[in-house]
Image 1 (spheres, rainbow, N blue to C red):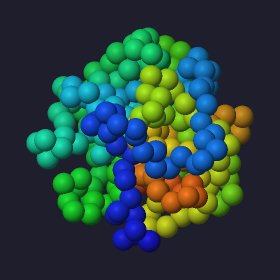
Image 2 (image 1 turned 135 degrees about the horizontal axis):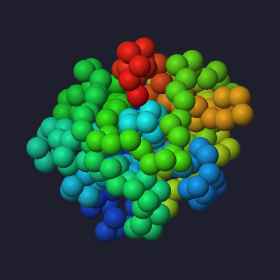
Image 3 (image 1 turned 60 degrees about the horizontal axis):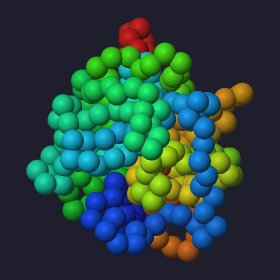
Image 4 (image 1 turned 180 degrees about the vertical axis):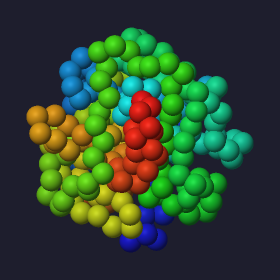
Amino acid sequence: MFASLAALPLLLPPSRALAERPLLPGVGSDDRRAPVPLEEAPWRSLVRVQTNLGGRCTGALVAPNRVLTAAHCLFNGRTRRFFPESSLHVLFGYARGEYSRHVTVSAIATDPAYDPAAGRPDIAADWALLTLAEAAPAGTPPLPVSPRPPAAGTPVMLGGYSQDRAQILMADRDCRILGAGSGLLVHDCDATRGTSGGPLLARDGAGWSVAGVGVAAGRGPERRNFAVPAARFMTVLRPQASAGQP
């Protein structure tokens, strides 16, 4: 399974592909994605992550000043290095070129096992936590993070700024966990380029919690997409929580 995963496309932000009809790996023929209201939970906690070069992905607020996304979204293919903090921007409430708040990034945490410059990077380590230079806007609650991996068959949702509808937040709200393998959660949520970093959301009581972060999409006729489980990055979140930090 791991060998086949290495050949899968990451949910990268679009570039030259926009000049021609884009391929949409990870989206089924019936395409269940639909626009979601930015003012409602859990969607108000999702953000758009942008770089100075115009790359874009999705992220989720998981602490008052921390945003979860995919590490490959922060990789500069020209320099073969991660972007510095000064090149990253987090946009809250983004829709059609407008947003409610722009926040800069003061620090980046990634998994030491993830090297996007490697021939076959470890996709199961493809996560990043951005520390914001200031707290998120009032009225934007952090999403809780669950270290317990959801079982096969668990209903989940996944939202993001897809490459073909990059100006609005869309989500598949009718999908499920298919299983797990090679350190990844396998799900059938519609997800394609641009939705990288989008949170895989599982029901948690009356609300939703982050079960993982979307990182890769399959190309087969059946939906079979992949997320890094939350347990992989909880080791970074827990020390701060125990120390009383946000």
